[in-house]
Length: 183
Ligand SMILES: Cc1cc2nc3c(=O)[nH]c(=O)nc-3n(C[C@H](O)[C@H](O)[C@H](O)COP(=O)(O)O)c2cc1C
Image (tube, rainbow, N blue to C red; front, side):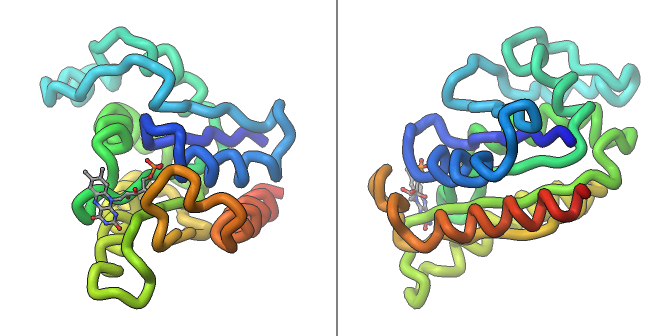
């Protein structure tokens, strides 16, 4: 089994820790991590070259990793919530998947979705975490990727807030569910 995990935050913080927790449930030869905080990649320009050719015309660090994305059986998509949306890093990554999404390359694959934000669970802002998650769910639904589990981590503002929290346990559990779904 091959799983690609995508870290959707440049900050070396909560999103990265959630991905590391989930990835620890797989062996190193089963996992490839695309850490968007560690590579240089460009926005989708919306040129629609991919609609005609099924390929992206951008040549950068991310384009070199797209073969791994296409070959994977499953994904771990992780993003912090920013203004009730997914991060700009994750949005750009998802936009760059357009060549795959439109021709069904990702259809039938599986994923888990990990989100984190500062809003407290019982607060009036808690909806923003749902909204952030929704934008990733919308992509998965359209690309035909089955969402096996989701983790919403509340109340995490500084980059270490998630450490030792119950949310990392949820990341382990979600990863175990993903693994089981692939056996
Ligand atoms: C520009 C910006 C907007 C944010 N908007 C939200 C938000 O709408 N809801 C929320 O709960 N947290 C919000 N946050 C807080 C982050 O989601 C939080 O700090 C998270 O832990 C960051 O994850 P990271 O450490 O992986 O980058 C925002 C942070 C920034 C910088």
